[in-house]
Image (cartoon, rainbow, N blue to C red; front, side):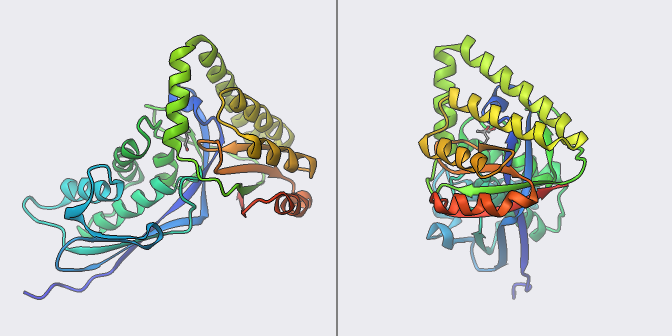
Length: 313
Ligand code: MEV
């Protein structure tokens, strides 16, 4: 019987953590924002068997040959098993591309999984609610990150700025006015699984010190939410700087991130911090429009590989 023709294309955005990374794994709140300029795209076309083609990862392989810890294969299987009629096997070629740098704190893994989940569900005639996408992507995040808080899958699935506490329903964030952020890529890949694992070991060795730091980060996030809601740019900038210092104390920053956050502040940014797992990856700076070009130029001169801009309003 000829296969019906179909092409399905789906997307999911990247993300930045505005405040609260790492502490969020330990029950503190965090604020995260989707970055729609950066995104993962999944395309499904008919094929005699299920093939995964991931040119950015330089990989093309049948689903049947995927390794047990392959998050793309997991996203396909989880979605297919949830929504396909019993006994029906997947027959499609999935091409997965992404403009989100890998292992750089911008949620590339969660975005790729979200695009795959949406495409596979689409193949089965389902348009999923964000919470359904988020729950399936969370399962793939466990493969990628070990003990994820759930913030990455939440923000890429809901595609809205989110106040997030692990295990509680996420809340969209109220924002007064416009907050402009620059995102700078250090060009140093840093898998989140490693920094999250290191923080866990350090917390186990010294729970009192780490829990104090987590609580201080949580307080920054609570104040940051208030700053966003009243349009307090200076307040938010100060909280980003403070959050960066607390991340230094957690030992997830490095010389490059410390230098580049200072370069941004010296060039007029209201605040700057690492964003995501740390020890490389990306940093973010809050800028007034008038200072944006100065910060960009200073970052370029200091060796930042790529700069993106996003506005929260
Ligand atoms: C990663 O984007 C944020 C971390 O807090 C890890 C997590 O929340 O799962 C470092």
